[in-house]
Length: 443
Ligand code: FES
Ligand SMILES: [Fe+2]
Image 1 (spheres, rainbow, N blue to C red):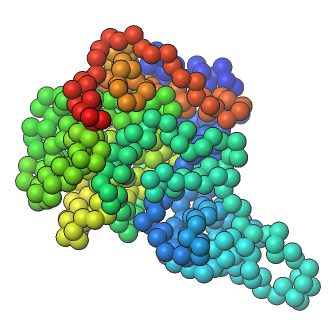
Image 2 (image 1 turned 180 degrees about the vertical axis):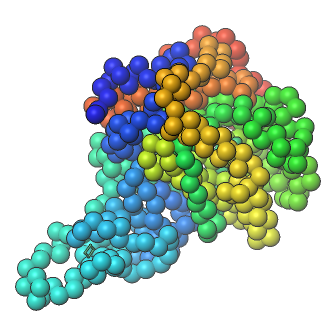
Image 3 (image 1 turned 60 degrees about the vertical axis):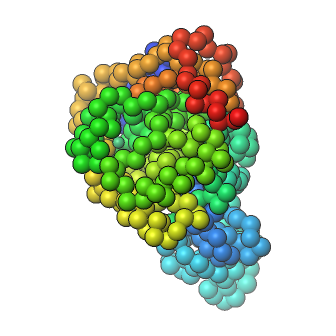
């Protein structure tokens, strides 16, 4: 069964802040997502630092499809479906590494890092030398590009350039990926775990849900810093017309006793020089539509890989400043696992909530008919940020980014052509974004 545009629009009434849970559990919606959304959007694959040398590769997914990204001999980068052309096996089973060829474990076809089929067992006798190997190379993604060392790909030839897809989110990405002259490095070792829920639950939470933290994380924050959510933190929200979201509070370590406080202090001064006060002084959570998220100001990036309507994998990467001292990198890696690893004291709180929702939707019937409430802050957003378009909200709590996310999701799901963005008219200002911090960013 396929849902038509009318049915999908009924399920996602983003303008009213009403979303049907059907979009988190329906097999039909999930199948449509794989084609209409993951088959067309630009999706994050890897960072430069993960494939720095010729022959370096990293295996990941675009939607449900296995993909491998590899550094070529000439320094360029290619990405392919990680699928053998003979019988469709997942070709490279390693998570990452360095190689000259990818050899299939089934019958032994081998492909070089440029995707060319270079060896076929028994080519001369079994195939009588008649197989044209040039025609049976790996399938390349339709477009591959990077922004500030972050590599993205799309299966759609008609998708617009990556920077258009990222839109105003680039301003915030610059604040963590290009915040210091040396940029960032992703440390080896991706932590992966599974949640019995829908991938959008993670994506929407990182895009805009600071609201949950005061309650869901009360026990972990009581250990790290009990005062953190005693009142709503000062901060703001950004909801991009392209579906991206970013919520931030003004910077404060989550640790009362921060072991790298001195490094962070100096780092903040350097960041202020490089990207301005607004972006140097925040702790933030964000989602680059559709399934790439992170905690900027902290040390975590992640992908929400869909594995069915009610299952997703979290792939969690530790991010450090490339030029940070080795002992600081090590401390950050340990700290990131302590808080945001699968057994991290903060992360388990979220997993518990997502599994809970997934269970209600899996076994429930009446529960699936109840629309969920996404109305927080509706009508209280403004578009008066001096540097970026999109909607801002002057408080850390709100659901504008979530509404923007589902608006964009609906556009992908219902558009026959690649859904180009039509900009909104400026909003009538109902609340003014705090520009005292924002304006100093470009002085
Ligand atoms: S499936 Fe890969 S060689 Fe046969
Ligand atoms: Fe959380």
